[in-house]
Amino acid sequence: MSYILQTNHLTKTIGGKTLVKNINIHIKKGEIYGFLGPNGAGKTTVMKMITNLWKPTEGIIEIFGKPLTVQSYEALKRMGSIIEFPTFYEHMTGYENLVLHSEYMGYYNHGSIENALDMLGLTDAAKKLVKNYSLGMKERLGIARAILCKPELLILDEPTNGLDPAGIKQIRELLKTLCTEYGITVMISTHILSEIESIADRIGIIHHGTMKKEISMKEIEQMSFAYIELSVQNEKKAAYLLSEKLKLSNFKIVEKETIRIYDNHVSTQEISRVLTQNDVPVVAIGKKAETLEDYFLKLTAEVGNDVETD
Amino acid sequence: MMWKLIKLEWKKNNIGKYIRNAVILAAILCLFIFSLAYLGIANDPDTGIPDAAPNNGTISSPIELFTSMSFLIFTSVMLSTFIVSAYKNKTMNLMFSYPIKRQKILISEMLAVWIFNFAALVLTKLLIYGCVLLGSRFFVSSFPIDFHMESVSFHIQLVIKSMVTVTIGFIALFIGMVMKSSKATILSSFLLILFTQANIGDLTMAGNAVFPIVLTGISLVFAFLSICRVEIDDLM
Image (cartoon, rainbow over all chains, first blue to last red; front, side, top):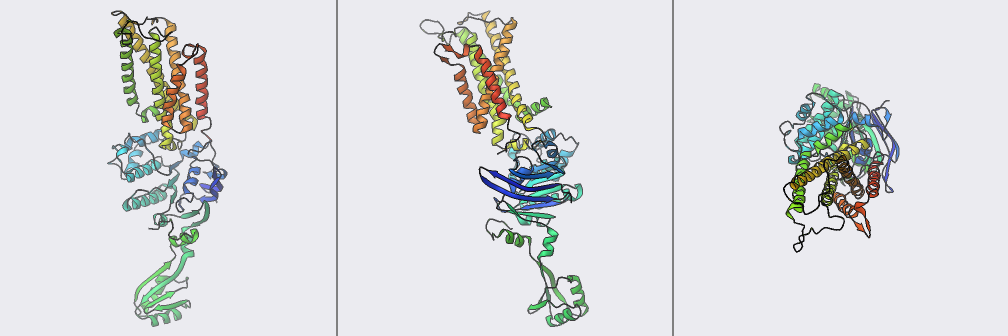
């Protein structure tokens, strides 16, 4: 399996204190990788090493199939990043900041700046000095800068800080678009699970400087299946049909008009069809599953401590 | 490539502001020296003789002293803004995310400051010497005029002294970078002025020919020390 980015036993120690230890990350080309962890878990430390701002104490980072070294400047050309918070030349306009970025990156593509500003909804603010931008606007300008040169790999460290709910939704949709339409691989760190639950293909969970789990969202969905909850007007007849027609044995009537089915080989559509055909109207039916939040909390074992799960 | 980086440094640090300030500084210095020479502001009120330190009795001494002092401070202020503050306000994080060798980035920043201040200092000195010379046609100078603008050696000396003055700023830069402080950078330049213009016993540091050469050498060593580990050090 080839990865666009992988780390092998990545460790960082500063002043005798180990910030992260034996971090193994595997990111495939074209996927959105959610890097999850509570505040202070070590997400930024790892991302600083990936962007070459910090050098690993031990371990290897491999980007675009090559080990990252102090001389890996070509790799930086193919990456876009925001680490911690985006910084700008505040006396310049948003547009001028992006022009400057293009100059340093050696990227000259007509219309790319306007396009990036448009994608982030900053066209009208482009001529304003950055010192007059709100926190959310700066965050969006930072993302515009990160995607400006069409990077193959986008490293975003908590990019939605300071954004309102509409802004967060916009960024989520933008990342999905970048991934599907432009084939950009995205690594995004956050401590707000709902931000990436709907867009990530894989997640890595880091806690106290160690990688707890790396898993695809599909695997989480499969693992986390709990039961199908069924609401019907006639639960006794429904139970009979489940048993006789669908050959289900692992279900129980939990209360009047509510049945829980624990067999996972039958679809909700099939259950609905059989019950309706046999004159048992289905009031409601739905899969109940463990959420990413439950999974995360189970792994980090810090219920409601410093993790935001809104 | 390096010239392009230097121009980008000027652009992003709003060089127009520094040009304006350098012009104001040059004008103030010119007016001050002109007043020293022709308006007698340094003359003793009782005797009417200029109240100058021994060996500093000619007009070129105050010109060299005040222009060097002023532009050494100007250089350190610019170095602190271009480099030390960039570390503090994290714009250096952005700079080091570009596919450009870190040492090249720092050298371009140092050169951007050096070239600007060298040019400004040379032009300021030429302006002041020119004004003093022009004034001598109409007034009598309180200080003897001891320079010949038509001689080549005058211009060579002017250029070399300006190079030494601006280069000394790298010592202040190193101190500022080690202490991670813009204030330390500027304060160091004041201490360097005291040191370079000091008289210790019979030894006059400012008048010693070997001293500027040694100081330039030391300054270049400090410039090297400022950038030598930048590729491997973590950007904190």
